[in-house]
Image (spheres, rainbow, N blue to C red):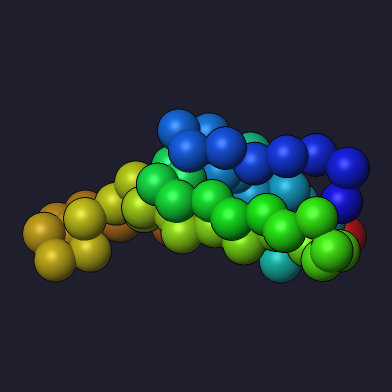
Length: 66
């Protein structure tokens, strides 16, 4: 809540919750919105991957959830 997101920031997985490893690149913020009276910010993230032209996928097999 205390951090501000900005256009151009990169977004990574946090690893919290144990579903995904920490620091996997998700994408880049292309639009951000913050209102002083709200407790959250919203953003539109452009994925790093072009899913329409995906040809290879890396599967993580040794990840152990928390």
